[in-house]
Length: 185
Image (cartoon, rainbow, N blue to C red; front, side, top):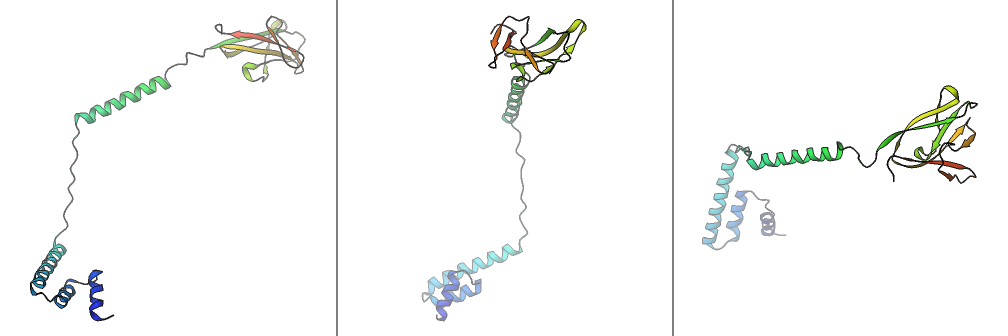
């Protein structure tokens, strides 16, 4: 590579300072008018560059955007929407499913323990309390619907409610009682 090729590479890659660029333009331009114009532009660039280094930084001024009536209306609409959503989804009572307290009672004076189990609680036995005269009872909250249930005497003997005439086969050779809680289904 000769000296002119190296200078061309440096110029194209912008790896020259302003003085080197001026020298380069002098060497490769044989046209005096073009050379003079180029040198003038490079001199102007150098002057601007020097001024930019000496100038203090320009402060950035940020203006606050004024609140407009549309902004207030938007915030108000958002607040009202949120209140409506809270009212509808969080504060509205469930009207489709009601609970009723259902009393289960059975007379088994010789039992040491009595439980009731049914479709209302996944057939998990719930212990009943013994009352005077051999009766056992428990009060359970049940939602509207139809349920099968049985009593479990002393943890081993299962029997349907003798006071409830509606029955169904339990699938194991016995019967369960059937009750309907709440309004007719």
